[in-house]
Amino acid sequence: MRALGMMSGTSLDGIDLAVLETDGETIAAFGPVASFHYDGHQAERALIFGAMEDAAGLTDRAARPGRLVDAEAAVTRLNTEAILAFLKTAGSVDVIGFHGQTVVHRPEIGLTVQLGDGWALARAAGVPVVFDFRAADMAIGGQGAPFVPVFHRALVKALDVPGPVAVLNLGGVANVTYLDGDAEPVGCDVGPANALLDDFMLTRTGQPFDADSAAANAGKADETAIAGLLKHGFFDQPPPKSLDRNAFRRWVSERLPLDRMSVEDGAATLTAFTAAATMRILPHLPRRPMTWIVVGGGARNPAMMRMLAERLAPAGVLTGGEVGWSSDHVEAQAFAFLAVRSLRGLPLSFPWTTGVPQPTTGGVICLP
Image 1 (cartoon, rainbow, N blue to C red):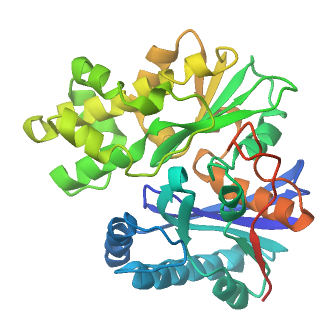
Image 2: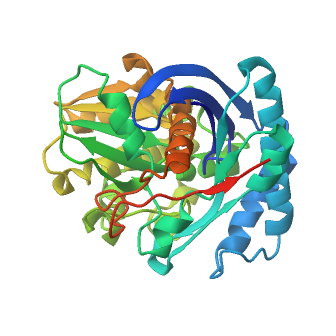
């Protein structure tokens, strides 16, 4: 099938779109990719950030208090615009996998909320849409994340690199997929990634991220502070485990005096914290990976890549682009892959990734 995947991550920089030809088990071909950036939609971006604040106290995934109603409408509208513009050049597709915008993820109470109306998207595009991928997993005790390991496994099978292989996705949160031959993948969130750094840069400079690592490369990381941050109990937990975008916000604000640090030192420290947090997953993996492949926005952060290479040595640390992947669009491709799996009733999550009791399918299928 020719499937379109759509992903808007917790970094809130825009919507990634990617076409994949797949049967949900193997990848026949990679199609066109694109990104719909939020640069011209700052009001909507601010609204979604506000919705995340309003979602913090949610206990009912169907509730839409405060700004969530308007934010959901905005998410649906932006994704519809992105779909219609993209399909003009990408050509027709058989199904759309629509992740939606996560505003809260609290696995400890079985709650995850992704904003977006899949039924409205299906009507607008005239194509079946699969969305709400995570709910079925969480309903029977899973963490609701990560869902991409089954796709990472299909990607890595086509590579000739030393194993075990770890695929590290650096979005707002960092997650890893560990792959070792025919063994079942291990997947989990490993800690904060771009969210803390991006929020810091926006607050201090008005810029949404540390472009080309200019600030981090000019600063010095506070290793003593990082050692204190790594005492968070999350790092001692074995997989499966997952995080909300803002899970570390209070922890960091109470233990890292960012308001007394220069922009450069703050950026360097937060970047190094992500690299150090990644190292903390090593004791929980069956073997130490020989190759790390980094995808997501963090793969475009030179300081992040340098710090990861230093801390994970002697393992090789590569970007997705260096192995022929579209680093910025791997998650969008994953939800194209997962949409086809959902249509076929194949599992999306597994005991060794989300902790669900048995391999579980999911997703709501919306017909136009």
